[in-house]
Length: 362
Image 1 (spheres, rainbow, N blue to C red):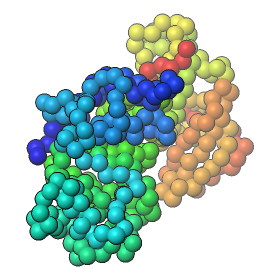
Image 2 (cartoon, rainbow, N blue to C red):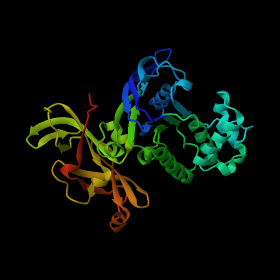
Image 3 (cartoon, rainbow, N blue to C red):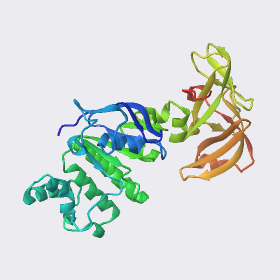
Image 4 (spheres, rainbow, N blue to C red):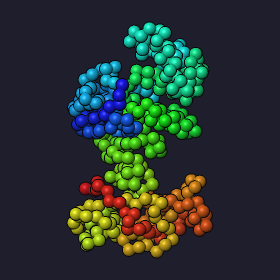
């Protein structure tokens, strides 16, 4: 099949008892896109995937694949294929018959379906293990068999529910490279559910960050990282400090606002008035330690924790009304002037490194 755009239009999933798992979301995923649905447990990402697949009913809204509304179609008629987290391979069948199973259910003769299954195993570089059963395969090999089985139906969209969660860290990196290469080779959309920020950043053309059943932001990975739309996105993606307060003064350069502890900060915000809430983000690696704070762009922090991460060292600090503030320093910079827990140090950043967030302050 040709790749097709997926469109989710005002979709809500409500369970008996009033629990809302997905709350009126809308999303367009262009044809040929690697899309990652990203968020913490319980945010609605897997429910969204299952509704696209047809394995979960929709309470309100519609899903369109290309020119076809698939909202009420059964999974087999949607043009999608799903690869489950558990892989769900049949232990008594060899790799070839596992991959060919859906064609068997469609009545395709044995010779034709096994030939097609071998083609799929070649695609995932497992044709040399075609006669092995799942118990004779590693976790990564089982995953690729499941991938081949999903692709044998020639879907327009492949749906993957946390496909790397069971793999060890080294294998995850290798398999995600294979997934991206395969997606580019096939030219179809992959919609991939994950709770790993690193995984989403490495794989996706489009990152969709979800929280409490809603979409917080949908954009390219670099946009999500550098310009998070909300405090939730900034904190969930990591490597950002979020400062919140209320505007005290407004001038031509922006605004000044006061955090709960009484510290004042500047921000290049527009269209805000005194008394209004404001939230800003500053990347951890853009904060300088040991330099006098610029007016409105700095403070004095008390070192709470130091973590060595190899190429960088993360220093966690606190200040009056400001908790969980972090600075990332290159390893060589930190060890040329090391800090200890309890040290009071000046912190500063450049005005251009301040990013305005959609305020969630009441």
